[in-house]
Length: 323
Image (tube, rainbow, N blue to C red; front, side, top):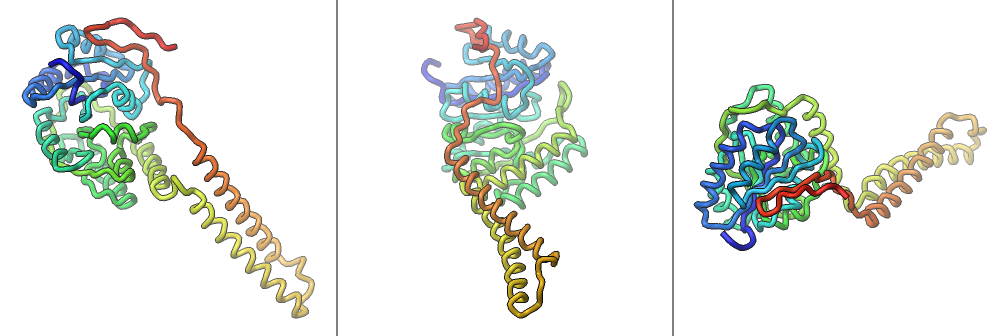
């Protein structure tokens, strides 16, 4: 189909050589049936197997397929950010390359999106993963829902569908790909969820590890902070500073009253030093809040969280070196 693509499918790839050809075949079959122009973007996140070469073989027979190869392994968030920057469709899908997500679900995502939503996230109600991956994921989802109130069963499902404004406004880094629905909800986009089929892994190995839970938890705390105070950090630091300062002021006021009542001296009382300390700390927190407000207003994120070493498509298979 000629013209700019209407649908873009972004697939982060890290050592998934065995699953790429069947995944590509399934995607082409399903997307061709939608009657929409599409593109497939495989983002190779520093694979050490033949994943990039496999995508290049697919490109030779399919002009709608593209490869974006990163310089090294930057992580899934950076790979998705690279794919979002490169895609051209007004509707963007993301899915994993391990064949556990079923491309046949794509029309259902589109139908849900047509109901007026901006982001549709998959919900793997029946998961075919080991218990040590399933239960920590459920605990993480429960914690995210409690902290953010987004109300999704599976925040971290990689199978998602977005309208273009969502991916243009969300800044991905660290492990924030796990919290995309939360970020979208924060930006007042309409978020929905549909149950999707989940298949057992047939190729490669899971990239899940205990350390990812820690990173995900820390990113959740970061997002929770920004949800409440990202645009007004002085409100947080101001509350803390006012609390410390108020307690210190009351302590000093109490000692002042004792001095006027004749209970002298007060200079050797520990409460005096504590009161002065609390006032000082309170002033510092207030000053920190003001500085944070200035930085928030002035900050502009200019550095991308990844570096592309080359881009490959059938019309142009040249290597683009970093500049």
